[in-house]
Length: 309
Figure 1 (spheres, rainbow, N blue to C red):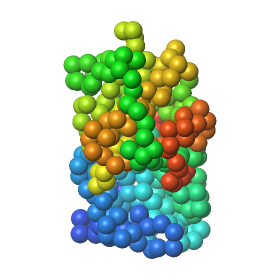
Figure 2: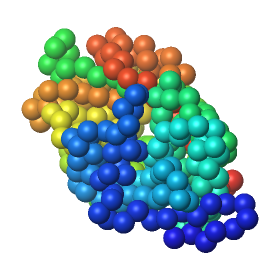
Figure 3: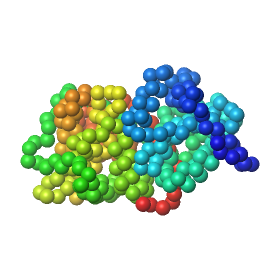
Figure 4: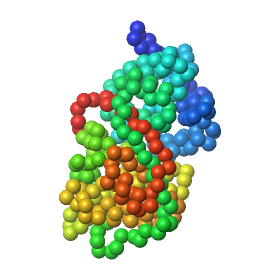
């Protein structure tokens, strides 16, 4: 429990027996006041299998609730109940002051919240609490088999699978692909690359063969980090990047061909990914490979440190 002061509300930890009920409220969307049990259990399974803890709080003595998913890599994902009125919005926003202070003290880099475009009350709470709207995220998907895409031709690239002993090589490639990126550039340099990889590793089912570097003529030109989607027959492209000198040479297409090939080898029916709506070149590439938008969410960030890693 957080101490009460003159300018902040008390945050009360939700007891274990009320956690499923509270998550139902936090995950509710549209006109529904509570998400169904399968949605709640799906999130709990994802957190359990990916090693993610959730902190749940009640704001003061009201109905407002806040959840924070503690991702590896020093990131907190915010879940927020939909406020009923302006007073509830103000109370929920005030709750973020002690919450942000706590996570800042614990060394977290930033808090993030993803909300639907039409969730105006939730968006107002985040803005009042000092969160910054960064971009619209597009969630894309396609079947792994149809329309058919050939695997990358042999000889065009060497594929190096992840091993702990070559982790520095993966870190180096990921850092190189961040240069001048159009995908959420606001996050570049905010975290140590080890934290970045830790977060990607916790984004779903991890298998070393699903993390690969593409190398040409002895030079690493891109990387692809895939994750199994918990509870679905799908692979997610958790991260894909091309080094600056290799952009425009077809490496992005090779990476997507490899991702679809890996999905078929793993007998996964679907491939999913998320793209920053501002990244027009990437969106054109994904569309050319048959990916179609299935959802949109607004990304809000609150940085807990002014320093870059």
